[in-house]
Image (cartoon, rainbow, N blue to C red; front, side, top):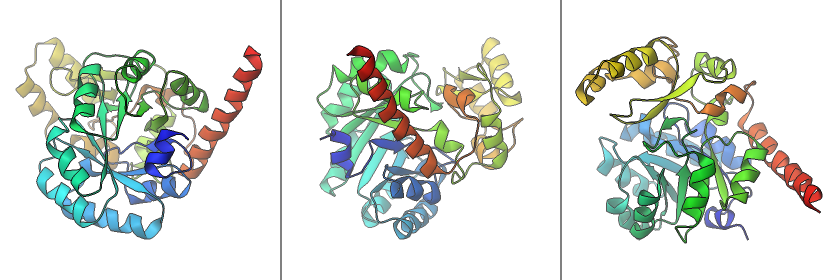
Length: 314
């Protein structure tokens, strides 16, 4: 049996990424109800709001769902207390070292998955005791690896290095891409950009329309000296690019980033001054669809492409 389906008790080995400002309870519950694994993105929520989203998600679905927690979160101790108190079954951690929290979560019967972008951190995550790894290639939206390793190169490297299941992420925007990830050794995929542009996404309609109207080359990895993040090119992106070209320090970039920049862009719809995090696959997205349709289209294309390849090599 597929290891990811078994681990999460889901019908399809498809995980919706826990994206800041996009992944509230509506999106997570819809993906879970469709047979995948929905994730609430805790990175854009205070502790009380996170608790509210967890409870609403439980009311909206009886299926498994999880919470994504960036380990750089300012109220991290309280967040993990809430996850235990609310009996969350699955937690995806990212943007930090999972060793401190994995034991705590697993002692409370919580399955733990950690997001990595290189072999070094994959091995550290496995040693810490996580149940699975998300290997996220350079194509992905949001925070990314400084090495700029593409998904095609990263997935086989990680699958050959660890003994736990690997979930592929970065540029997964079709059933064909999903099949390629499986051919490279993954047992599941994590999908972000497609779901960011879904009807149930909590992203602003301006951002969703910007995604479906984007073209090849409209995103680029930025702020590598601070925290690498793939951004859609806009006025804010060009400010950052100019500052980096002029030798901006980490503190300079932090001052330029300021507070609320991501919220302004993705949640409030400021397409000029806001931070717009999205993957390279955005240029292939042309329609805002229900999350259920996105998941089923991925799966059906995966099945049909697998059959096409089978016939091709006979």
